[in-house]
Image 1 (cartoon, one colour):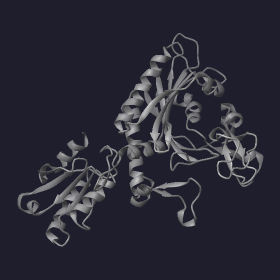
Image 2 (image 1 turned 180 degrees about the horizontal axis):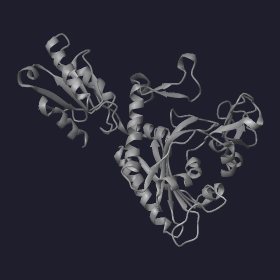
Image 3 (image 1 turned 90 degrees about the vertical axis):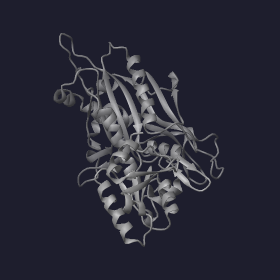
Image 4 (image 1 turned 135 degrees about the horizontal axis):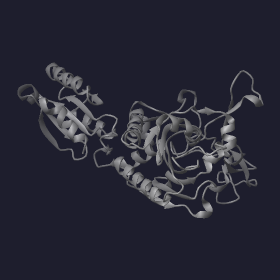
Length: 416
């Protein structure tokens, strides 16, 4: 999968011509389409199609007081151990013995390592100018709670959603795009009345996450209840959605009941008031979706090696290209001209690829490998009968379709 991602333009190593940068990746032409398709589908489903949700897009760098109030400056850390011999560092909870997994040297006692990524604003690198790249998207939604409330005029229960980058100075990033220091989240803070049955809301969002997994074609996922003694200090209940990656079962998404921990940290006075009641602090249900981990899970579940081909069985709505158009023969100008005419027309509605290189079989397999669900071939029947051949990626079955009905036919296929 990693090889395919590099070879076909899904994901490239970051800064590659300068030797790269540890666990830094760039999304290529196909990767950015897949990524945007996932984000757009999520935004449409959880924000635009709901009456109880609004979105924001907050700054990556916030006032450091935000992180002081939230507890990140003190608490946001992982246990670090260092090898006395090779000086490599590891997360203590990722090492099974007191010996270095690389060279066998002895490991130091664990110490806490803060994951906040620090920089400076302004011309002087001094304490007063210290700021941090946000380690999560959540806090900005709490900080902006009153602004959103006053401008959107929402009533409980309602949610604030955001898609954006976050940064964590991970001790041991790895496993391709699974754990990187720069990553993207799709996150919701769903505010409820503390008198409401929070478990009802929690179960509802768990069902919503299950439906989302179906929407994007992820099957190898499991909902895992986190034991009470392992819960984060702000959480009353957490369920992790774990995916069976090739390197093991790891966290894909999370769902947490954060009670009123965050709003109480940021607001001295209760920020929400209903008619004929005292002001109070709403409680929060938080569904969190990782963008990069979603992409990796989607690719893992879609990837299939068959006897003669590799195929990415992506959901059509996620596929970078929805359709590819081929002239049967490159050396027949009339076929090429007609194929380009159809290509130009389809591009008004869909993301479309055009390919006239090599034999038709290789072109089909090339599109199968990047997940294009349908291929349209322009042949001599096209010139005589105004028909094209439409091929299905998964079944490889072909059917004749009139050009006049082609757009509508593809639209219907994409909704399957």
